[in-house]
Amino acid sequence: MLYLKKYRLGIGLFFLFVMVFSVIFALYGLPLGAVFYPALVFLALGGALVLLDIAAQKRRHRLLARIASLPAALMGDFPKPASLAEADYLRIVQALRQEQAETLDRTNLRCQDMVDYYTTWVHQIKTPIASMHLLLQGEDSDFSRRVGEDLFRIEQYVEMVLAFLRLDAESTDYVLAPCDLDAVVRQAVRRFSSPFIRKGISLRYKPLRATALTDEKWLQFALEQVLSNALKYTPPGGTIAIDLEAPLTLCVRDTGIGIAPEDLPRVFEKGFTGYNGRTDKKASGIGLYLCRRILRALNHDIEINSAPGAGTVVRIRLQTRQGRLE
Image (tube, rainbow, N blue to C red; front, side, top):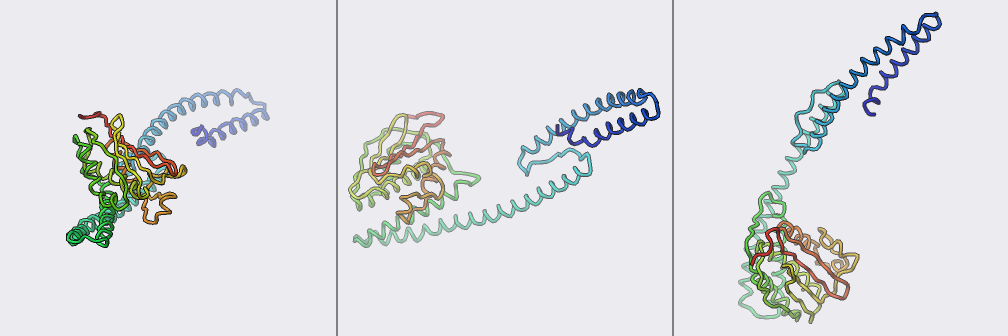
């Protein structure tokens, strides 16, 4: 249809000329066959040429469709323009591709500069944090404990910045290996021992005695984000339980305030804090987003079940294509 629409003017002129000659021949009493026979011959020849042209246009269309499916940077080998308009369009496309490439180069350069700066900042900020930890080790007072907890939160935020920077890096440091889940859980719980004690929150945990194929460092980071949320939203005197469900699913259960039903589908969105986050002004809405990105990169998954006032259950499914490793 598009082909006929493109050449509708020529087709209309052909039939108009046939009609004009037919009327003139009829007015002069000339035989109409002298008009119709050449018209039929032209129709036959024109139809054959049209079929050949349609086949060529189809080949051209398939080539352009294949080029259109490629990223802009890989587009090339455009067919030669068949008309002045096509040549103009081709020049416009090439100019836009050049402009896009230059814009992308400038954007990548600015982004790389920003990533380099923040990466350097993260590593530099660790030095004064470590120094402050050393200064606090010699004191045992309520003030030093509060400062130590604030310093611990600063460390968490710094680690979140570093994880965020590494997410979209061209090269990652994921190292998949058999990992003892008990070692990961104990190390994560040990880091949060002070908040557990300060809020009087009980920990229910029995040895899992399981091994998973994963990256121990990144799995621990994800588990720490989950524990941080559980401690943040569990009131004093509450309980946090860590156990294992089949098949190879690490579960963190708390008796906290829960999550509103309308917020639950969006808890993994970047920057989403929901009702609880608006109540707690310190919420960033980045922790769970990072968890899901990291776990999916490790071929794991995470899901959350919760209800207001009924606590929250976070399940980290550690099964991979290789299955469970014992």
